[in-house]
Image (cartoon, rainbow, N blue to C red):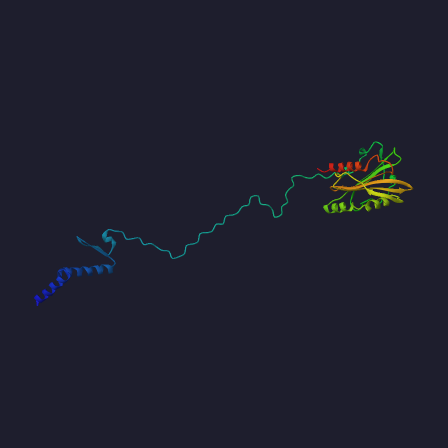
Length: 275
């Protein structure tokens, strides 16, 4: 029986290439290893034998420090919005301060001066020239500024008269420019202010191109108390100044002060009042 067992053992050794003792040793080692793994320890097989243990302290090593993993969500970082600061902020409604202050216009010079005429002319009134001053041209439509009237004492009869008025606003100025293009405006005013018996002739009268910004002039021959007089009349506008000027003299004579000269002198005074 023993011999039969040895034969089987030898057959087993020949089958695995190991002796029975070796197989028994490996079996014991496997059991120990399994028990170590299950117990949570560890062992190392070396030339000196089996070393190690269930705790790390047995091999002189410190246990690993556990890492705590937070399950709560981190607080969000506050969002910082940069504050916008305006440089020299303007108010909701802002009116720029003007750098220059316009001086008021000196309308007193909107007239025909005595010094603009020859030495023989003297200041007089409209009534002395036979002109009714109750309803002057454009009076009530525009504010009157100045009224002027002169008479030549050395001539049988010659006079210069007229007035200036204020035309404010582009709309009124445009209306005035259109209105003075009507010739009837002159004759109606003359008949209304003078005791005209008959209008004998009326014609366009040439004026300098640089007179005012708009102008119109006519010459009219009218009979007054059986005497024929010539009226040279001009209406013009320079900026906000409106001008009506008339020279009156006997028909057939030559005016000492042509209407063109008188108008240009008034225009020059008006231009001096504007910067």
